[in-house]
Image 1 (tube, each protein chain N blue to C red):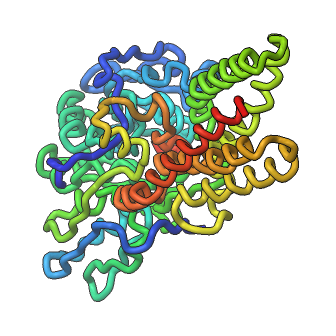
Image 2: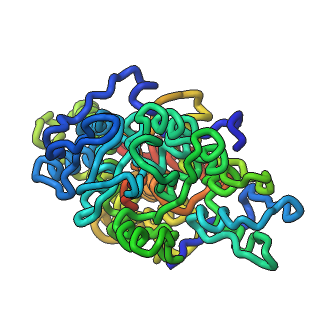
Length: 370
Length: 102
């Protein structure tokens, strides 16, 4: 592949100077099985409540970057030297996703070092890649454990892997399995053949919404900053206006002025992703802008009908810009946006957002003093 | 439902003269961009391409070109601002955990 070109993608914890801490393996292992290379740990094929709590925390961004499992070979059920070998990432969510689908099967799982990142993202970075697979096949002496020479990789690992190079360098032939772990039993029973629908990524309402908690958490800080700024402006306006200062009055005004901005944030980060396929247009920045504009018009026409024209203008300018920016950010979570497309829509959308948000900010500040 | 992104923007190219007809590009493409025609791969839904690079990476005769990348506005923005190492996990959901890969 064209490895010299920059691939903007997710960082790994190691690049951030953090060390990976591995999950206590006792939680998901049940005994070992004897092989020619010694004891191989056997994983449980069902999730415990500890696994589910861990997944929930990771989705809300708690300890997400150190949610890794130890590298190496694992057994599921009672595998033999003829049993298939699946390759997976060392991100605990990916690993859980895989093992919970393998209830009645006997097979091997080779966990490779993706720096605690899931398969798709690691493949984009090349950490789920040819070199790491070859390294782990060698390190685990896989060719002694199994008699066949076939590795089953998740299809979404393909952007990082050159199947022909894995074959040349390790002797193992790569077969790409289905996109979703849930289709693996059918794939394995079907002689390693994936039906066309197993090869398609989907992007259902649940797929879109499961990504929103992290976005909401990320919004708390900027919203808190905005709340503080509005509170200071309210207080300053009360003092300048020589009105008897009261904390209650300042807080009430802060809440009133802030509320539409919270609405804008939720519109861009939750509503736009939820309604994605039903909002007209293609560019995500446009979809977010449209919803933001609808929200702003509704607010200005009804709930904030008695507000000053400056505050109304501030909302009409800033709310669509905020919603637009956040839904543009959702491009990173979709299963269908291309880098070229994102660069193109950013070129148009960013200047509009910056001008609109700046004018909105000026209008907001002035509105306190007039 | 198939989502549609912007028209005519992607960098995907296929040189049928180099194609050996192995069909691996059809297998790895998550967007069904390719079909087989007369034992050669053919691009039949170019606008569906998300530039993941899987096809080019797995094309032994190097018949496919695509500038691979992740269509993530946040990553592009950080890249432009010269800020490295601040990406998903921190802020965005670009881990694509929703599609439950393994």
